[in-house]
Image 1 (tube, rainbow, N blue to C red):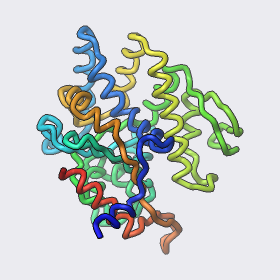
Image 2 (image 1 turned 30 degrees about the vertical axis):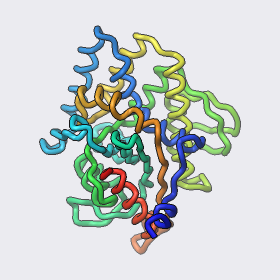
Image 3 (image 1 turned 60 degrees about the vertical axis):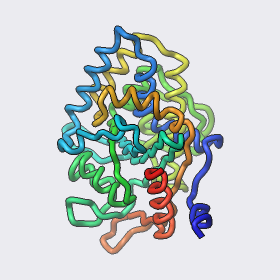
Image 4 (image 1 turned 90 degrees about the vertical axis):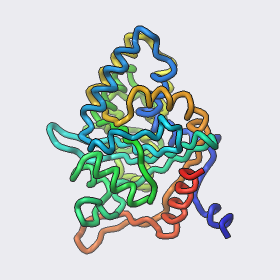
Amino acid sequence: MEEQKKKRVKKRRRKSSPAKRIAIIAGIVVGLFLLIGVGVATYLYNQVDSTVERLNESTGLSPERMTTEAINDKKPISVLLLGVDRRADEQGRSDSIIVMTLNPNTDQSAMLSIPRDTKTEIVGKDTSDKINHAYAFGGAEMALDTVENLLDIPIDYVAEVDMKGFQDTVDLLGGVNVTNNLAFTSGEHTFEPGALTLNGPEALAYTRMRYDDPSGDFGRQERQRDVITALVNKGKDDFSISKFNNMLDVLGNNAKTNMTFKDIRTLSSDYMAAFKNQDVLRLEGTGGKESDGIYYWNPDAASLEDVKSYLGQLMEQ
């Protein structure tokens, strides 16, 4: 019975192309942390440490959330990855929500992308709403509490990057190359099918469109993964100390995390094998407008229970 239940969980091994792409989306934050942890030269150590301290100071998290010892104790961990859409002085909303779970004891990990329109209880607001509103209502802390409640697992760490940071990173690396399979217009930009080279503003517009996509939010997630894949590959192929320093500036101005530099270094060593051995999970569900006239996406109850069970077992091993 247990074996049948595990089979219902939608997952793919890392060797498949979609699995590689969904894994790379985490690379804009955690992948960079891993790179910093193993590749930083001694004379850059203080610069990186100073940058990470800035990321810690800006989170706005409670002391309890800032004193997590899971990585230091080399326990299985879960990290909430947030891509935040923020304008001017607004709090913003979490446009991308990904949970990455890593177990250093079994060298296994799992990635789950949660649709931003998922209807769930917003912990601390006593209401059900779109899950991306949790960040808008209460920042990273409320987002952490809400995702924990949805998945019934502890979320130890958070790493967030706003859209300005994403855009600046693309421009810093001289643009990214993608292959587009859908003609569409997003904002001021029009995208034709075929090979495209995108600058920062174009890449942001390319990854934000969803209403004209037959696949809706899942189609947008695919474009996000493609752009991040191209971005990380470009960074690996075109690395320099000056660009590394500029990347630290982008990260320091546009990212937040409760990981310390020591956490990042331990993550890059003791959790690397698990990071490379990923299962990709997917929630099944349906979406539509409800009585309030607002569109929500509702996860299938059986699919949600299977994902919760799978992640719970991964965290306990």
